[in-house]
Length: 227
Image 1 (cartoon, rainbow, N blue to C red):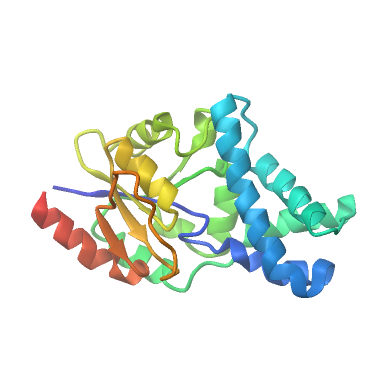
Image 2 (image 1 turned 135 degrees about the vertical axis):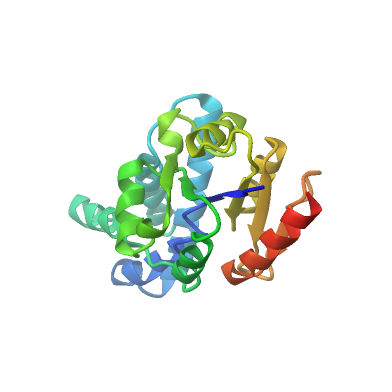
């Protein structure tokens, strides 16, 4: 049995909070809070667009979320500076465990990036961090014009990865993403990067819980035995 791996990107392989450093020039000490709200609104806007069936690519959600976060804290950006921050978002830093784990597991598992981001955005952010070379492909929700956690997105991932008669396992630090994958019938491992984060009880439990990607190999071995 071969377990195919689908890695979430933002929050799992690369760190959206890396934008806090970029924002210091614009908002000073409020940078961590603005960055956090930016990420929160980015996800909220994608959820709402998915439900409303008024799709715009993830970059649009990201820009609108930036504008909202800035206004919420009483700040404003010039169009030029806004564009600069959007460009910087394509160079988010990778988590330290991302490259070594992808390199190791790529010898044993087909592995793909699976994201709300477009193919172009994923190529840039993953290429910037030398992660792209360790992946067998990219799966973007842009192909079907919806967003996680729409069940259709996880069905698309199964088709796009070629995991039709093999198990497909999502690897994500986003609990809502894990719940969405489990509800759609996929395996899903939750990367609990923040030990204070609580997994919401929706009746769908992660296939495994690990504190970082370094625990992924052992978790997959255990899942292979129990299947």
